[in-house]
Length: 280
Image (cartoon, rainbow, N blue to C red; front, side, top):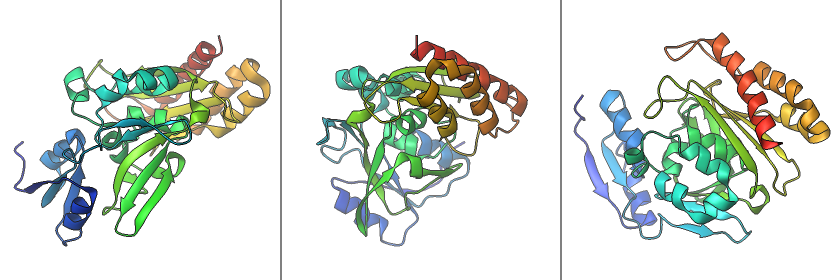
């Protein structure tokens, strides 16, 4: 399907982007565009696309003041997967990001764009959620931080206002070094959304040592705090019970990719498998 007519504006600064977005024209900010352009082909009407790719420094991956990492809005998924600091400190993000689309797509798509799309099946979102990441946001009212635990609201809906830009996501020092296992099932490998996926992680210096994150089995990407708390108290002896809690927490639908019952059963199996892997 052909793209509808729209105005394309490439900007060189955040202020320029915010100014264009305030002019009363239906606008969307674009980082990589792999989600946005696909949506515009199908249903999304946009009068103006504001491309952020040309803003100097917005593609950087830098050490943050608290000892973590800051991933800029236009850093591609491939950039993140190749970065030695990300690979060493946050292997959960590399595992999940490596499952997004195909290699060519990952060289255009961005982690921040994947998150801002608000899809319950976004692979990078579950990693950032489990790593206690924070979105750095700027808009007409100034700057604010949004923890990823508060960022996702529903399918395609986030806490970001339409006139705000997520300039980056910040990974804290406390979740660095977590061992991770990402179990993902889809109809075919590459270029297909997950039918169901579970991220399990363990370690780091945060107060809670366990993470269980679920993909494509609820209206938004979610963690399972009840299972995490149980594991923090009882360790690997509680794996089977934690897997049951994860299964009972999810609220999947039946669609072309799989039935709700199948997804529940796979959440149970993938959670148990992942927790055994990260505590081995």
